[in-house]
Image 1 (spheres, rainbow, N blue to C red):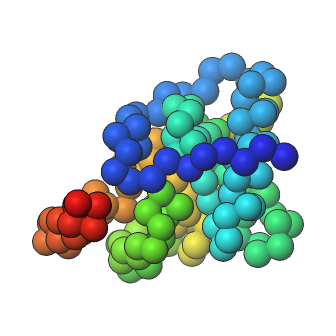
Image 2 (image 1 turned 45 degrees about the vertical axis):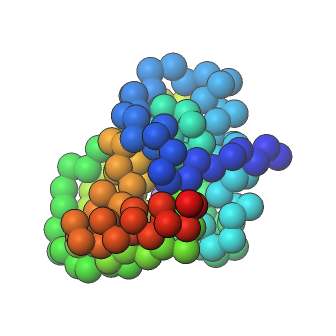
Length: 165
Ligand code: NI
């Protein structure tokens, strides 16, 4: 049971791009286990990506069951199909207390590898689809802040600076 520290905005490490996983070994499996421990320890969390815990590998975990009964891991995920755009309210462990409405595909097909490197394809709907897209943004160094309107982003950064000063 290892809980990792979750980086919070505006930590510059959240802006780094993640790299594909090429080695499926003990170090990867430990990362996956730690990601699940860290996600489950955070109240009401449904997903977590490796760059949020300062590890630049394209690994994400997700569980929307509410009782830790549906752990899913996606390594090197790619979206191969997108349909049905909807406006969704999202939050992020790296931005505590912030909610942002984002247009996302609510129907996707994702291709990824499992913890042994085996490829699989899965159709995802609604919050499962949204969560995978959210975590994939982290791989590109993007958080919800980059998804805000320019006005909201300016105000958000300004009010944070004021709070710290
Ligand atoms: Ni996030």
